[in-house]
Each structure stands twice: as structure tokens, then as C-alpha cells.
Length: 219
Image (tube, rainbow, N blue to C red):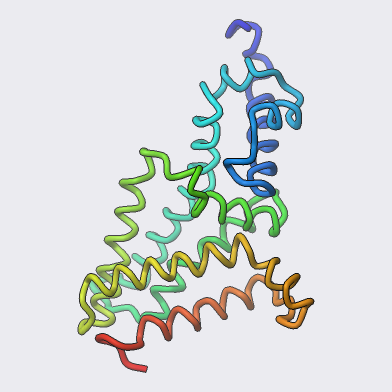
């Protein structure tokens, strides 16, 4: 396949591969999806994947960057807004800035909410997927910015405890995104089926109280 032959259909072919891969990853996870699955769903050959992405691993990395990078950019934007002119933000405002960007991005996606949140959960916590090297500095920036804001909001808490609680918050969010439907199935609906905004507020409440409990915090 030459560059000359591929050029006219380059955009549509690449998008078709990305969209097929996104849906497969959302449903099955990084480890379970094969190159054959991708090419079959996208109706392309292996050469097309190699031409546009280089390898299956690079394709997976592009999926992660495509969805996580806008979330992190929105996190920083929202945090800057509530800490402008050295203002000390509240813990709830900081958690809003950390979590709400997921809702903002899903509204701009053509994927269904269910698939989008499962895909985000896979991108965040799938051990086989990991984080692309290019995204590590970005995540460090987010961690540093939010830790600084939280230290100002809860000055009595040690940096070590603060970092772990931010990590736990990340875990609550990822678990809910990826396995929220499982709770409904296991309880036969006894947990209810709250909409996305309601679940978001419940996560904020839970993580807010967790941050303020124990060392350096006030209930």
C-alpha cells in the first residue's frame, strides 16, 4: 500500500479504525482485543492499521490520548478558575474540577454515555493498557496542581496522606465508570439506576467526606 494510494481515503479509514477500536476496547478491555478483531470490525486490512498507527499498541495509545488529554486540559482550566489570584478553593470545588471534566467530554462525544464511560474506565485503569509515555508529564502536572490546591484547602494534612486520598478518589471514579452497571446487576436494581449527574454528585459527596476525615481534616 503506497502513500499515494492511501491518501484519498486516509482520514475516513483512520477514523473508521479508531471508532471500531474504541467500541471494542470499551466492551472488552485492552488485553482481550486482538488486531483481527479491530480489522474485522473496521473492515480494513492489517496494512491499514500499520500504515496509520504503526502497531496495535500505538493505536491503543492514540485512543487513550484522544480521550484523556481533553479531560486533563479541562481539569486544569477548571482548577485555575477556582484558584485565580491565589484564592483558596474549597475541597468540593477542587473535586468538581477533578471529576466534572469527564461529563463535559462525554457530552462532546458521539459515543453513547455507557460506552464512553466504560472506555474511559479502561483507559484509566486497564493494567494492560498502561499510560503512554507522552501522557506521564501531563498526569504529573495534574497531580501537582491538585495536590497544591488541596494542601491549601486542608493545610493540616501531610502531603503523603493527600496524595493517597487523591489516588483513592481516582479509583472511585474509575471503578464507577467501568463497573457501575455491575452493581445494578448484582443487586437486581436495589441500588437504583441514578443518572450520570446524580452519580457524579454521589461520588463528590463520598470523596469530599473522605478527604476531610482523620488526619488534618474536619468532619
